Length: 494
Image (tube, rainbow, N blue to C red; front, top):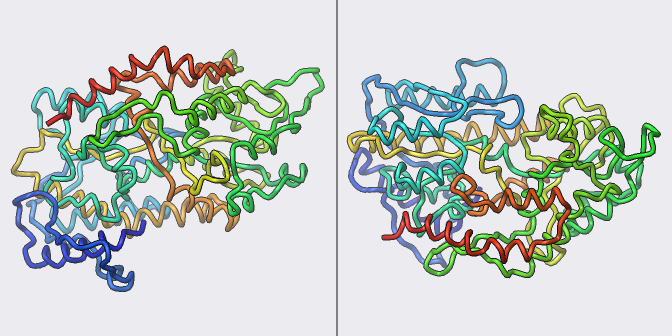
């Protein structure tokens, strides 16, 4: 991620100041000097030596306690910190190398504590005043709820952290902020966050068979829109088994389950929940762009002429919501598939070539391609308020250096070697991945899922029905949703 000229110079000056005064445990972020917007610093001047420049402090072999989630076989591909030994897997080995560098620098030993569900452990620990964990890695929606409960430190003023540095994801950090306060962090250490970005897969063989326009060219020309996706998907459905009906065993233009409303929606770069000039959250309930798009997008789930919608097959039980889609795409029975990046490993043995695309735009006037990150299956960093003041200095040092070292070691191993090198099957997909990574965002629509906001669940229900009753739903729920936003904001008012 490239920093702005203003930020780059401020960070460079901060690094020079820190090199003369590191070890100071007073205050919050590393010191910097304010500069004007017109000042420029060339990339050559900043790239080579740009770092936090944090001196080591000797922890005397004490443990640094990291609470994280266990991985699973599909959604959580990595827990970001666990690498017990070098095993030849590039991502694992770079995580191991980063961990060793930090442990050696600070004479500390990582103790990694993992559970399938981290959230109850955080609540129990903080409420008991128990200093059990130095940092927490969990889904961002849980972090948002923890911040409202007062369980987390505010990161922008935490000692030795500089959340404006390029190894932090400034865009998503801004999306998750409340009244210019930052409690939940995304940086180059939280790789699972990037694994959870929404994308579109396409079957190259089917695309060639149906002689559709080159999806890569459509993206490059700014013509990859939702309407274009629907156009390409129509008239591909086919009754393969000859039973006279279209079922999960047949062929379709596209496949997805109801979670995919999120993927499609966040391509239009128009959040439901916005912030006013005072930082207050509000529901944009009468936004015609939002309403018109949802009225067009949601019913396509029920259109058999284009869509294999896995929610129709709940009778199959088990993991049908994933399996119906992955099986259809793997077996060459769906030309497109909507899923997060973490679906890529499931296609490792796919016989047909596939490509990766960003989420389609609202229309051709929209400048950028945008995507979301899954608020449950992503990862984020939090620091519990139970960390004693005597440890905040070293905790800040370790976190900042972990993020920085991850930018040099782990992020390239993930994006360049694992996603592009291992899973992407052509150079064009690698270019598309850059577009996805540069365009990820989130908003409080999904962030407050665990705080009682029902928008996600309501959208899934509308998609299940193929309903266009968006405006009436908004009118019915606006007061309730607004009340939840106000209640959340009340936790952070000065």
